[in-house]
Image 1 (cartoon, rainbow, N blue to C red):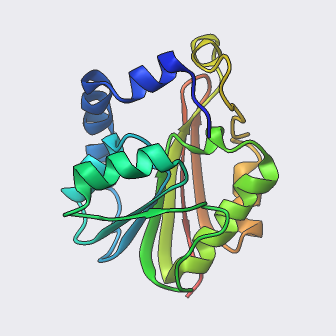
Image 2 (cartoon, rainbow, N blue to C red):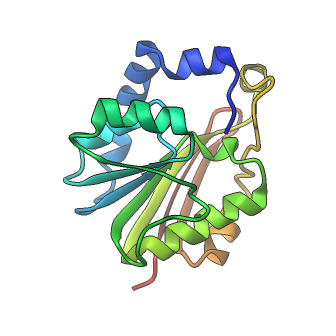
Length: 189
């Protein structure tokens, strides 16, 4: 979804990539993501770079054509890069051992489309597969960064129910107000 110039520069910077690696690496160590992982909405690929060192097989799904081309150029020899929407995934039911998304759900313009992404994540997961990720929470700085951007911040209190309605169980949500919400959920076996 659209991002303003300042936001694009930040998310494509080496400093952001270093911050992502520092924060994401220990978080990923908490979970066994299995042998075939899907990342939804990798944008400029900072999270993709970290995931490639953590999982045996990675496919990324990116809606933005320019970002898709960038990802193919950067990672196409190490990851499957597919252009498409997380709300209508072009993958077989039950294909992936895990589905992840990081700091992208707030760029989805409506709650209905976010819920469609949750439902599609459940559909493409194998029974027992994990859906997990994180997203930013509303703060003054976050609001400033998103002037002119799509910004639909997740309601952390509503997230467990939304994930359960999408078909997940063992839903865990942790929120640090004005910072981040993380989540993990399992597709029933």
